[in-house]
Every structure is written in structure tokens, then in C-alpha cells.
Length: 358
Ligand SMILES: [Mn+2]
Image (tube, rainbow, N blue to C red; front, side):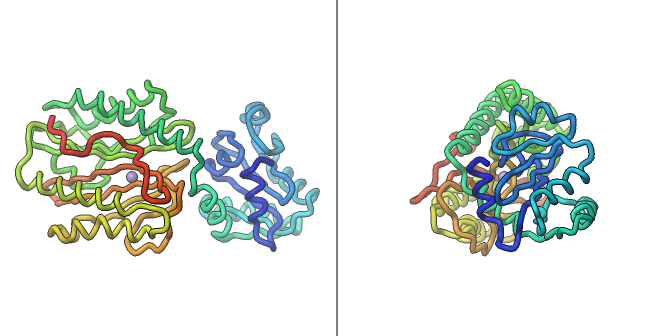
């Protein structure tokens, strides 16, 4: 077993003999092998990666720290492993098995007189491991962030009256992939005008117009690791109200960033950003959390949400992304991704945040 698998096997609760993992991200995290289907069985002594024929050869070559088994029949293979390794209690991942998969897997396990434990415990154990990033992981996130920024810098040159939101999203994706990204972190958000009041608006055929805000909430993936950044820019110019909202979000975001350090709660960071927005008279206009963890998934622990008592630790990667959204008018969001340190944070985003007017 490799270090991560050993750690997991040591963290298994006393009454548990093995963990059965099916999440793509978790299989990748523990074995470094990428596939869209597979099962990772981790006992106290050994780890087995079960894949079908499509992945057999590649898994033999690339999977780390585990014995690769290419199965013809998953049920028979799992039951054989349960008997040979004297497994009685097997924990399933609570958040990735569908109801159908859990029922089917439990039936397979029960047939050989073993029990499936269905709870959130295994997910919590793995989340606690993944939440603190190694230097290697941070480096991948940083590379993804570099690509995101370079692609946005290039794409901003194309912003002019008449360009559609869809075109901006496509240009960004093309550039990110050209620059070496595995893909995009999520469906890119490139929205303009009134649509910017919808935090997760979907790019359509609307065109960029002078006097409008344009929100870019974008990210790339490098070696499985995501980046996440939001910038709001304007075309032509902005009025006083737009400027006031922009500067309020900018200061709230700075207050959020200033609050980040090891030992503070996520609720403290959220409050630092949120209270500034509320005090500026925009109560009710910031209806989402201040941020979230980023890694092998675009949204992972910790949630930087109101009143959260979760305590930040060095090496966690989180976003700080407050916004103000005024329905039927416009919205502004500014988002950076940071690594938590002992006395503050390292901002992985280097792109300017003063309002860019194109
Ligand atoms: Mn985000």
C-alpha cells in the first residue's frame, strides 16, 4: 500500500474490516489511476482495485499501491475477496453509492455472510485526508489557476459589442485546453448585463453591450485538480451605482481574505465578508456562502458558510467569493482561491481586481 492507502487502513474504525470506495475522485486520490468505473477495496492489510476489461491493462501499468484485479463478474470477484480476506464488516461510501448501487452491493456482501455498513463515516475519514493539500497538489491547482488567468487575459481582448456569452465561454474553453488543461472545472459562467444578477446564470445568445457588467466564473483542470476564479469586468463604462456595488464587493472580498488563517473558523471568514456587504446596505443581496474547498472536486470541504464552526488548517485550499446581486439590474462577484497558512494565506490568483473597463 502507498502512504495514503496505509493512512486510510489505519483510520478504519475498530469494528470495520474494509472500505469499499467507488467515487472516481477517491479512487484516483488513493491509486493515482483515472477511470470512470471501478471499485477500490481497502482492508487493514491490502488494497484491491477492481476494474473491468476496458481498464485492465492501463490499471496494471498505472495504479499505485494496490493489487489490480480485472473482473469478468464483479459479484463473484468481490465475494471471493471477502471470503479469502475474512472480511465481516465492509464500509461503503455514503455519498457516492446511489440507492440502487448500495442495495445491490449490500446484497452481494450479505450473500457471503458479511455486512455492509452504510453511513457517512467513511466519507468523513477520506474528506479529512483530502482537505489538507500536499505541496504537489497545490502545485497542480496553481498550474490550473495560471491557465485560467492566461485564458481570461486572452479572451478579454475579444470582448466587444455584439459578442455572445456562448462565444466567450467557448473561446475560454478552447484556450484553456490549448494551454494544456485536461478540461474545464465546470460549465463556465460568462454572463452579461441583467443576467449577472443570477450567480449561476447559463451563457446564452445574449450579446455584450456597452455599460454592462460581464461576469466570468471560470476554472481549468490540471491532472485532476481544479481551479476556480471569478472576475467581473465592464464594457464602455459604468454608472455610480455599479461602481458602488463593485467597490463594496471588492472590499468585502478583501476583508474575507484578510480573515483567513490557520485556527479561525469558516464562519469567521464568511462573517468578515458578509458583514461588510450588510453594513453597506445590501442585506439580502448576498445569498450564497463566501466560499468552498477546491481540489480533485470543484466543490469540496470545507464549506466557508455562515456560522460554520469548522476550523481552518494550513494547507487547506478555499475560495473567497462574496457577491452582490440585484435582481433585474446586475450583479458583481469577485473570487480568489487561496492556500491557508499559519498566519494568513497565499493567494493563488494574481489577476487584478480593480474594476477593468474594456
Ligand atoms: Mn467558486
